[in-house]
Image (cartoon, rainbow, N blue to C red; front, side, top):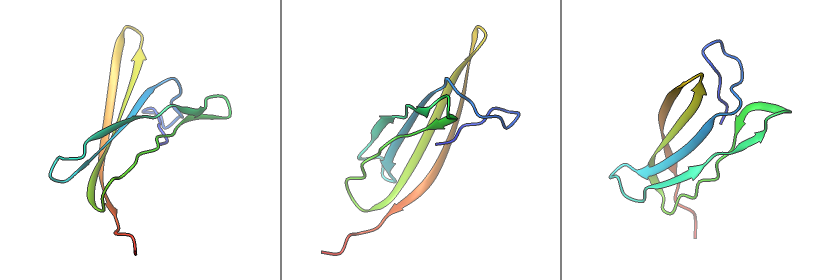
Length: 87
């Protein structure tokens, strides 16, 4: 997960989470997304979600950061298809 500020600069020191859930709102799971390496890759975070079943999933990423005494939050959701595996 790559996070940028409003000036399109990498955003280090943020709290990033990734939530997955099926379209019928079951199988909800939240995963922490710690930074990869703030010095070498600022603004890059990694989450390792586990999709239990094939089908359509909502993938929701939420980013929090402190800006002085205020906390700012941004979020994005995408749909993701997990294919059935051949058996």
